[in-house]
Length: 188
Image (tube, rainbow, N blue to C red; front, side, top):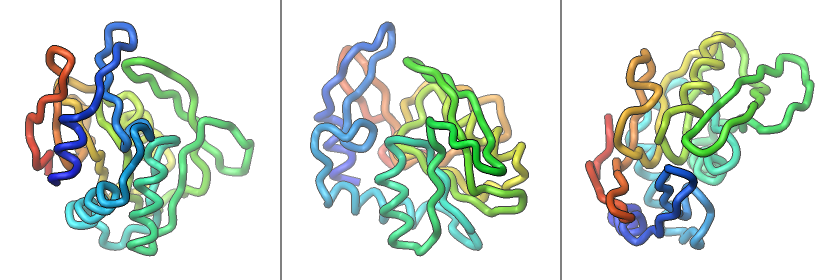
């Protein structure tokens, strides 16, 4: 995880209200995402995630899309994107997510009762988006085989007191305007 680690250490920090936010190619699309960094992350996800009998990869828009697309291409597992726009399709399920800096509704299509899914996202910070997604998948009756976030911002989050477990590739915190690596191997 040398490229991921170094790219996080080099990430600029901005303030969004009281929230210290690192700007990173995986979570924000800027600075430019180098193919080697994406490749390193995808290989690590494939090694860490339980992919046995997974029917679908599920990811929230927008910054999970590029990661999940690459994993889908490498594993031949179809991809479902949880959208921020309602389409009104049969079976569409809405959820409300709230993060440290935003909130809104999202919509799941093409996930059905009994589907075995891998949930992927870019960052686990407050846990607001991930908890809303996992709760909605539970409501649908999908079997969440595994859940992986690339980067975990250490500290309490909404999943701490839940039955949901999220694997991560690297855990960080932001101290005095800089990213600090807490665990370079993440959570299993």
